[in-house]
Length: 165
Image (tube, rainbow, N blue to C red; front, top):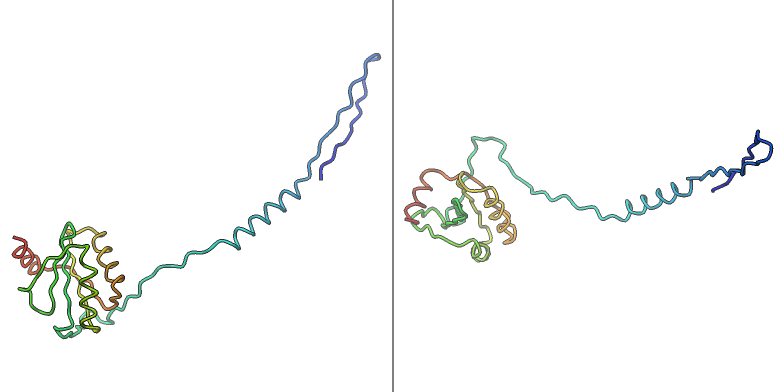
């Protein structure tokens, strides 16, 4: 472990003797062993986080269209500043505004009424990315697994302006 070597020094002067010097040697092996044991312990006992991923089903062809019955379609439009409008089916005149905090309950109610519900989320390009993430989180919390994301068209913006104005 550690040791001390005694070194005698010879003096060239006649009356005085120099003190004996002790050389110190420290063995670092036990410290390295303890460090490796601690490192191994912490590596083996650490809980690794599971990757959080979302499965995306993309159509094989961009030109392919999917026909959906109007009674199954819930359209959620997200305008800037998290202004949310929704409609059921193909009735754009029935567009209704909803607060973000009420969105989850609306989604749960619509899914309970129709278990084959498909949700179309249309997001304005002016809206923040965080708004889209919040709406998708609400869809996941409401257990809606069948949804699609699309950009908002000019026609949709005009409908929103009509309802909001």
